[in-house]
Image (cartoon, rainbow, N blue to C red; front, side):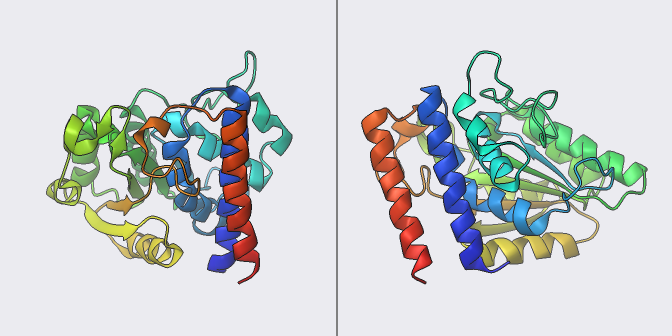
Length: 276
């Protein structure tokens, strides 16, 4: 798929994120918006997921489960869930809860929420694929604050030891977590060197550049004998002027006035893309 088309889809995913969060009145916009380009690329170009009942399909696990709106946003664009249901986010009895629920939401491979558990599950899926001699690949996205969890490194140690080259661990490095910058809270840097120490093939990219995303994922597919970690540098709140690089939008939903500004921002992005 051409980059321009991917950018248009990612912009629609961002609109879905803002729409859902505004309706819910709570949730996590910053890290959902920062991951939108990568998640769009995974679902529209990278992964074999045309049939979610196919046991040989690729798997995606959103380890940073609080960014559920980005997953719901792309699932809605792909037709797994109706777009009109996005306004049910976090509502009582809704199947679109604040964290992904594999038992109730079509297209969700794994429930997530407790940080560190998603990547551990992804490692288990990758190991199962190896043991069953399956060709599917497993992709998981972690928050950069999430990698402060010790469980993440236990999973990394196991994945590297078992040479799970069907696993791609993606770190959304927007450098902001709920209480501030990573350096202020508990620095995990250098992220790349840590994954290298656990026998990972490590690639650092601009997480908003589709050419770099494409090249990194191709590199991962062609790497044998070790898992791949992609550290993607991103902008928290990408696409919405007042949310970009603003820690206050880690876990706050826009009010009516802010919703209008955010959607106007994204409409302008869409108009600019249509003129290219």
